[in-house]
Amino acid sequence: MQKRTIDFLCMALAVWTLPHTSHAQSIFSINRLVDSVLMRRYQRADFDSTYITRPQRKWTLTGRLNVAGAQIRAEGIEQGLHFKSEMSAEYKTTVSVGVSYLGLSLNLSLNPAKMAGKYHDYELNFRSYGKQFGFDIAYQDARNFEGWHESERLGHITLPEDLLKLRAFNVNTYYVFNHRRFSYPAAFAHSYIQRRSAGSFLLAASGQGQHGEALNGDIDFSFKMTNIGLGAGYGYNYVPSRNWLLHLSALPTFIVYTNTSINYAGNDVHLHHHFPEVIITSRGAVVHQMGNMFAGIQMVFNFTNLGDKDELEIQNLKWMMRAYLGIRL
Image (tube, rainbow, N blue to C red; front, side):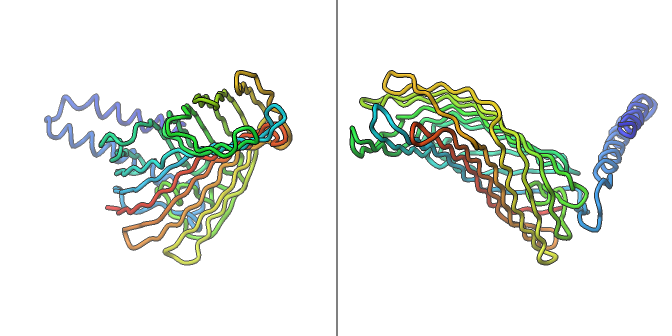
């Protein structure tokens, strides 16, 4: 904190002296000072350089292809009869371009199907992968689910599109103990480079809020859920050779707080909770370095399991896969 204060005081002093210089010199001085402050921040070596290093180039340009999906499963007993249902959202495909300067990034994402009027869902994602702390935040407003419902009362029926309306908010956070040798950003943000294999135990916290309803003829189902989970996991970066990185991590969190309201066929349904009920976040990545270029894939899966299928069990799956190509300048 003291070093940041000194950096900002230096910037303020430089700006105060600008009226005594020409306009062009003033702009050049500001740019040089800002670049110097960012460079010092970027190269601050709070890591073991034997295992982790920073890219030598200042600029990074990245193009990405993203595919995401969501699925909800329900199984239980209603009026003494067994039922099971499954609904999946239409895959969301986006293309994005990102630019990063000394670790500060800006990204632009476009959904071609939405621009053409073929996709009407709304989703907002915000991710930050720091060397010691990071998080995923996702908000989804989806209506284009399709699937099936099977029960002893109705048999097997196909559920129509737009039956389920779902609004969901998910947040997952992590804390890295061995951040000096194990780097999440090397696998997901590319602001670091993992030079040797290393792993770390992780602390994790998860939060989830959902509101959904399916109303159509014989199907009358609605629910509200709020869940908070705490847990721990492990992540590992495997470096088989100089140009390759393979990442795998799992962060199970046990639900410590839940507030659930479910209505089926006009009747309130009690969700019988059991231990363990979990929110699991799993991540995987493959990175290949090619000189000042890099390419790879990333995967993030979120799974939630609530209830007991002998009464009512609800499972949620949310996933994202990404292929990318980048260059450092």
